[in-house]
Image (cartoon, rainbow over all chains, first blue to last red; front, side, top):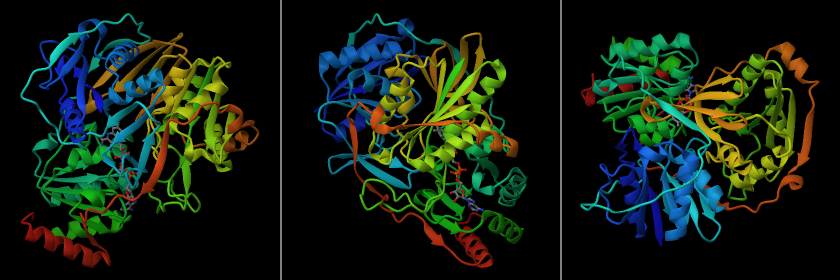
Length: 302
Length: 255
Ligand SMILES: Cc1cc2nc3c(=O)[nH]c(=O)nc-3n(C[C@H](O)[C@H](O)[C@H](O)COP(=O)(O)OP(=O)(O)OC[C@H]3O[C@@H](n4cnc5c(N)ncnc54)[C@H](O)[C@@H]3O)c2cc1C
């Protein structure tokens, strides 16, 4: 079996996610070939052939052109799988490559079992075991699902060119808003999830954070709705935290939230739903209405 | 200007799921259904665009059984002009490529200037239909948009990247956009708009009329994740629960 692993660059930096793809390929015992639109000065530490297209020329984000470049490599190498990280780059490019090759795509693969690919479903409450038609397929791999492997080697580089036309114009990057709160240093975080119900309930969660001597955190919908400032968002598009204690109040435990908090030493979740996926990450799941439980806990602590 | 919004109806994710007897999907009776969260942002953006440019006709499309008309009606009440229902009782066995192909078959001769879809669905989470649709129609596609500005045939959007970073992309219409959480704040349909929506037309197609592709991906089985025995579950009276948690916090020297 042969796999083509696609590396990513952002603002000239190589993203470490390529090493998770490398680990994934090793778990399959597959022959590996790599591809990147990147920079020769900053190559991944992997053993094998790397097809490199110049990011200065083709852009770090230019999916219509990157698709053509990958198609060329696929023609040369004939891999069984073309593998991307499930990232803003990967989920954008992977279906374009799948469409160009007229093959199936398996999204957000977390494991391989019984010769099928396992993908999460319904907020990770369920899992689907999926198969593709015989022949090639495109995969995106969930962040953190496979342990990273860095080789003590340099790739053998072969440069490639394309003549495709861009359909989009990349104007530039916009930096993340400056963080007014550095949750990465907090020892205790109490997070408000959508289960708190309404913005008026935020102070109730804040009170518990205070009583414990910690900081208020928030899940994404709470931030998107403007109830809590973005600088307090925990997750893939917020901050990655590792406090001694993480209290998740009305948080379901979607993958993107878990990615930001699962390294916490001790996790207590409060949720009315016993089956909420947060239970997989938590040490303790308190099955209760957060608006009844939290004020009672706060007053007890005081 | 002509706009298409593709939406899906999904179960409320807080539902108690059961695996269906076919073993490849969840049991879909007795669930509360709603519009896929990501698609609500898509509908809202389409309606805002209509409000901005005035001369604009918005079609909302959904694939699925009879019940998905509820989601279509909600979109009509939010301000879309007409609905298209692709009737499909076997919706769960169609893969993303087939869904995109059916939509492309409907859309190919309609000259939509802008197509909005959600970034992904909450139930299957494949994040492919919008992109595949754009590829089939040979239109530019921008995914994961968290802002949208239309100006005289040109659209400027922000794409969300990891860690709070964004990229700014310009594209000329016709184009496809997949919408991410936080793009806007979806409106609640008002009662007068719900009444008005009742008079709006919903065209129905049978999936078999539009489907030309074989599936490329099939579900072999659906199952619950094995419980890794992670959390200790505490249930009962709130006062008792509080005592238990305080005790745990003390034992762990966290208070
Ligand atoms: C690309 C991408 C990036 C993302 N980045 C992030 C990110 O950085 N951070 C993030 O958090 N999310 C992120 N998300 C969103 C993520 O997928 C989820 O939508 C989000 O985490 C859900 O937030 P929640 O758990 O607060 O809300 P929900 O999923 O709505 O869960 C609410 C929970 O509250 C419980 N509940 C309801 N009422 C009560 C009550 N009275 N008492 C107790 N419990 C109650 C429910 O049982 C449920 O489990 C991202 C999504 C995408 C696609």
